[in-house]
Amino acid sequence: MESLTRLEMQGPVARLWLTRPEKRNALKRETLEQLLGYLEQVADTSDCRVLVLGCEGDVFCAGMDLGEMQLRASASNSTCEWQRDSEVYRDVLNRLFKLPIPTIAAVGGPALAGGVGLVLGCDLVVASQRAYFMLPEPMRGITAAMVTPLLIHRVGPGAATSLLLSGEKWTAERALALGLCHDVATPEEFEGRVSGLVHSILSGSKEALAITKHHLHRMAREQMTNLLSESMEVSAEARQTSDAREGLQAFLEKRKPNWQPLN
Image (cartoon, rainbow, N blue to C red; front, side, top):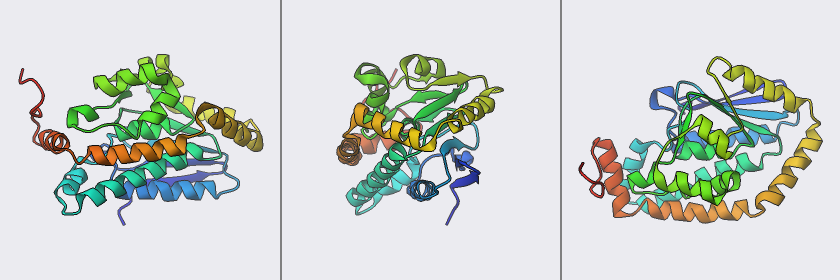
C-alpha cells in the first residue's frame, strides 16, 4: 500500500501528516482510509492528549484527487464509487470532529475544497501567512456539501455563504477575522506558534479538556453526525450531474467549462 500519510507519536502528542507533496496532498480514497485508520489508533491510545494535523510541502491540501475523480466518472459503477468516496470522507470528518482530545490543524499552505473540511474538523487552526482557504467546487460543477455544516459551525451562515458561493480565496488574515482560524503566524514563526499551542493544551487536565470538548460540541451542533450524513448524499449526487463531468473535464484540459463566459 502506498504511504500517503504518516503518524508520529511523540509522548502525549500525535502528529498526523499528509505526505503527498508532489500532488499538493490531494486526497485519494486510499489517503482518507489511511487517515481514518490513524485517527482510530489515536483515539485508542490512552496517553495521547493532543493531535496536530499537518502536511509535507507547500500546500496543506488541494482537495480531492481530480485524476481519481476522472476515473470514477468513467467507471460503469460510478454512482457506487461516488457514494463510497463520500462515505469515507464523511467518516474521516466525523472521527476528527468527535476525537475526545483537542486537535490542531497546522495549515502551512493553501487549503482548498476537501482540504478545508479537514481543517474545519479540527478544534483549533493555526495558519501561516502563506495559507489561504478556498472552495472552488462550483467552478467545477460540484458542491462543497460535506464542508458546509462544519463551515457554518465555525463561521456562521453569513460568512459561510460568501466562501461557498463566490469561489474567492480567503487569505489567512481574512480567515482569522471571520473565525475560520484562530491564529496566523509568519512562516518563520509558524512552527513555534503551533508548538506553543500544544504546550498550552498540555497544561490542562486531559479529563477536563475531554469534558469541555464534548460539552462544546453538544452546545454548538449536537446533530453534526446527521448533518454530515445528509451532506454526504448531496455530495455524491452532485458529482453525477452533467455539469460535474464538464467541470472536471475542463479543469483537466485547462480550459473554461462551457457555462463560464469566454472573456
